[in-house]
Image 1 (cartoon, rainbow, N blue to C red):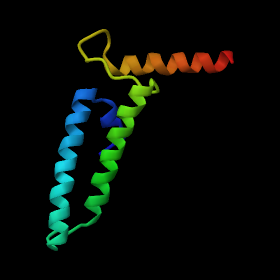
Image 2 (spheres, rainbow, N blue to C red):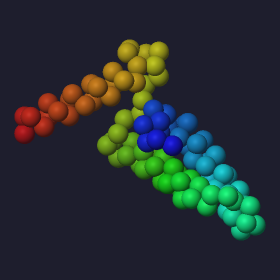
Image 3 (cartoon, one colour):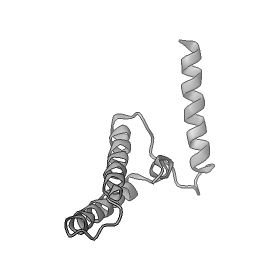
Image 4 (tube, rainbow, N blue to C red):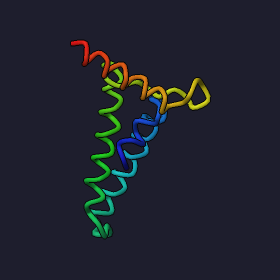
Length: 95
């Protein structure tokens, strides 16, 4: 899964996605042990997706990243990220 899709999710959706991925990883491990998993790289991909989602949650806790605003309020997600990027660029130029 692309990192961008994780950034577009709010915290509640990210937590539910992490739970979903953990269940999927559990099932994949059983299939792998029973030699029924045709592509074992799916295990690594699922682990990486869990790590991406947890990283984004942690970034939001630390204030490095912002939780997206719902698309119905004042311009949507894209404009919120553009404003944040422009603010960071302005702060970088002043320093």
